Image: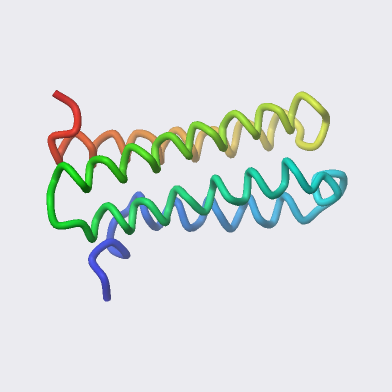
Length: 119
């Protein structure tokens, strides 16, 4: 098993992606192809960049990919807020998913810091 699969933050990112996919296949969200596809791509990018970063040969390269994952995480938070504003998700759903995203962001911050990405 690849070592990135043991990372708590990667596991949470996979769960987050599954939740976003489930959410975007329902109701009005499912019919909004632009927002649905954008949020799906962004959430997949989180786990994918964690995996890629963890497999890199240098701390600098790893930190770079973890930063991309962190940026994608912020993108998903933004898209969730848009979805809430236009009535696709309610406040409770937004809060639940933002909380998970914030935990992932904190985990990514820790990985970046550990690889020397923040000085």
